[in-house]
Length: 307
Image (cartoon, rainbow, N blue to C red; front, side, top):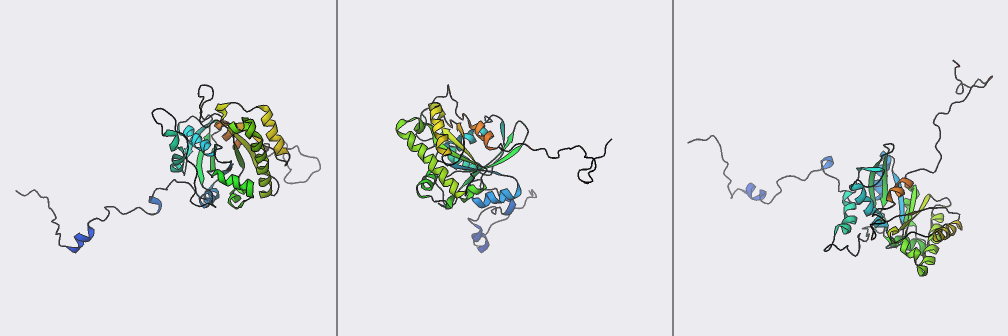
């Protein structure tokens, strides 16, 4: 009985058939049809993005284990769970990079937290920074904000202070805000406190040299707020140390993760940090101020018809 269905018989001796065995079924997509890698972004990618829209570049400095990467991981986890007060997620060109640094916070052993919540930052190019991208929408006015956040090894900041090596920090010239991340536990430790404060002053001096004077908006981000509140005396000593170099800074306490969740929630202070980093210190100006006409004035721009 004829069914009307034809079947092609493959001849295994045919050279064409043999050459096709093991070849991919589909060709690899090219051009705009392929998905972006969404890994960490290089300076060139950030520059290209800045050419198409306004991007707020934030410099993030701090010694190893100060909590820089933890702040980024916690920020990502909060915004992905719609828990960053005042903000909503809009887009990211580096989701996989965020996933990489946040992976440690998801790895639990029988209910016990891991020894290290985030991975240590390592860059493929020791002279070029890697950036994370995040686009947020502010609830209050619907403003969209693109953030470029560098995830730098703490050793870079250590070398900047000790050897004044600035070649890897040229990107800071495009930064509107600089976070100097400090371990709050070290500041509350009497034996370690003065060393941290002195290094903050030295870092401010290095930044002053890099910028040849005026430094962008500076913020001291004190981590481990869950371990206790920074005393007013320590805050005063920090600001006094910066004042020696004619530098002013805003001091903010954060808790990227928390060992005291009943009193201080994980992610404490990050919403305030983002709000402060995206708000200009310049006073708002009236776009087109009106003025009363002056008798005898013939200025065309200043003319206004009386009704």
